Image 1 (spheres, rainbow over the protein chains, first blue to last red):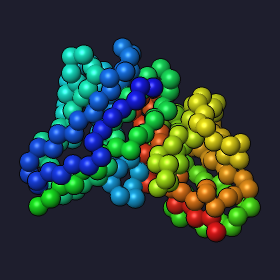
Image 2: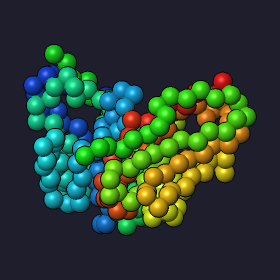
Image 3: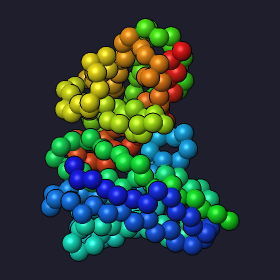
Length: 111
Length: 112
């Protein structure tokens, strides 16, 4: 699985959009980008995933660059409950459900 | 729809003992994966089961084992517990083996 690089931490004002970047410059053509988050002491929560097109669901949007070497997770209107560690994971779906977690980004939403 | 259920939520064991953790996946899900989370190593993959067969295995010693039953429920076992096995053990289920996984709340194991 390709390695990802994320900032260690980020701050965001409540009500503003939170944009979390992820670099995955060694991503292969058949590898998907997945985002999970983990709120303190809870199990990770699935957010969104994509291959090459931008994706949107009720939680967030995922923007993947055309060369697929980086992506951005967008939380459109961050709330205090969005404070969590956000993990960007690259994986090949044919290989089952093995997720390789990095250190992630600590997002702090402040009022 | 009920989520992934892990039991027990908290457990305290003594060094040298063994422990069994249980995971009930979301109804209809056939893939179950296990992870260990510690402050030092973060979230690490242990193994994945699909249709009662182990499909993937992480880099953990043989003291860590698991199994999956015909109803997709899974158990993991850790034998000869060490202090370093103290961790949050997380289970995740997925509909099939290559779709998004949903995690349970975990079992917090403390080895004393």
